[in-house]
Structures are given as structure tokens and as C-alpha cells.
Image (cartoon, rainbow, N blue to C red; front, side, top):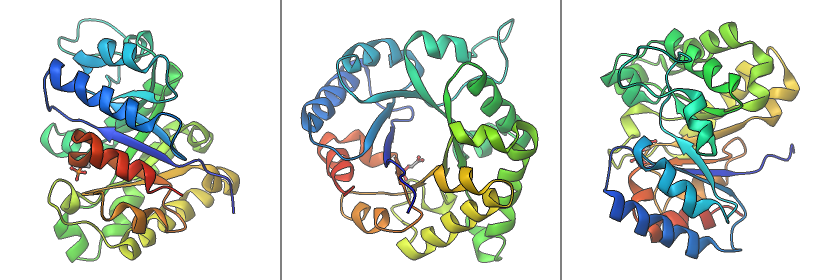
Length: 252
Ligand code: PGA
């Protein structure tokens, strides 16, 4: 069994205020102190990164961003570059979240460009992949996941996956309270690992593949037990310190 350290990452999305963000990070920090088997990361909204970064500086909790520009710098109103993220000690950045793909029309190749731009500055991309409900219902899940992955493998090269994380997030499970069963998730996680193994076995075995989509305090343990699930990307449940802490502790 390869030694993959579990990662539990909080994706706060566009929720809260400065006050609520501060009290949430304090709650998580206190609750975790010396008490977790997993690496824990928090991805707040961009504008709270400096503040949250200050709270995390004396902890082992990592900081991440939810998005990044595919470009380096220039006249791109409203965008945030990888360099800017590294200024605030970000370690991770989520790329290709389904909300970005679907609501903001980010293409597979744009996602690959973001992945590359992030790595160029030493950030670790958390590459999200996942199928829509109609894709699952028409049995095209594997085709969709393969397409989303292959574009990044083609553009970035397989060796780039030595410094990346993948999150499998079935779109029908995100924010819906409908979680994939541990078996359904495991099936896709294994597929992802095998897809990478076609190019490089060692990288495939070493990469952490997180599950995301309605992970809650009461289902995390079952999901995290599966052979190819190496942690979670947590949305709604990461906004409640106690729930998020229970999920972090579900890693054994
Ligand atoms: P959820 O979101 O836990 O609220 O389903 C997960 C995600 O979108 O990363």
C-alpha cells in the first residue's frame, strides 16, 4: 500500500463575512490542535486569504485558494495570479471546480492552463473532475472523467501530477445532500488512478485523490475507508467547525 497522506480540504466558496471567517478558522484551529491524522487545508474566498493566513501561520493547517488566473499578470480586470497567491503562503489552489466549469464556462483546456500556471509558481493544484447527473445516467461517467483528465495530462505532462491532487466531485452530489456511495466513489477513484497509471505507475500510486460532494460528519468515515479515497474536498460541512473537525477526525 503506498503511503499517501490523507488531505481534508475545506472549500468555503462564497460564504460568510470577515467575522464569520475568523471565528470559523479559530474554531478549526483550536479543535485540531495536535489531534489529526490528516493534512488539513482551508480555502477561503480570495479576499480573506491575508487574514486567514495570519491565523494559520503557527499551525500545520495549509492555506489554499479556490481559483486562479491562467495568466501571469497584466490587464485582466478582476483576476488573481498565482504569484499573488504565493504572497499569502498559499500551498494549494482548486482548479476546475464544477461551479467554475459550469457557471463560468471554464473549458477543459482553460483548466489545464490554470493547473500549469499554478504549478509554475510552486502551488499545488487540486484538480476537480466529475460528471453531471445526465452523464451518470447515460453511463458516460468514465468518458467524461477521462476527457477532463487527459487534457491536463496532454498539456502539463504526466510528471506534473507528482505535485498535484485530484478531487473527484460528481456534480450531482455537490451541495445536494446526495452523496455518492463509498462504492460508487471508489469505482471512479480507481478509474482515475488507472488512467494515470497508463502513463506512470509511480505517480498514479502516489497521487492523492479526494472525494467531494456532500461529505458530512456522518458519512466521511465510510468514504475515507475506501482503498483509493485519500481524503475529501468539503463544501457545506466545512462552514461548521464541529462538522468539519468530525470529518478531519474520520481519517484513521
Ligand atoms: P459540498 O461541496 O460538500 O457542499 O457538496 C463540495 C465541493 O463543491 O467542493
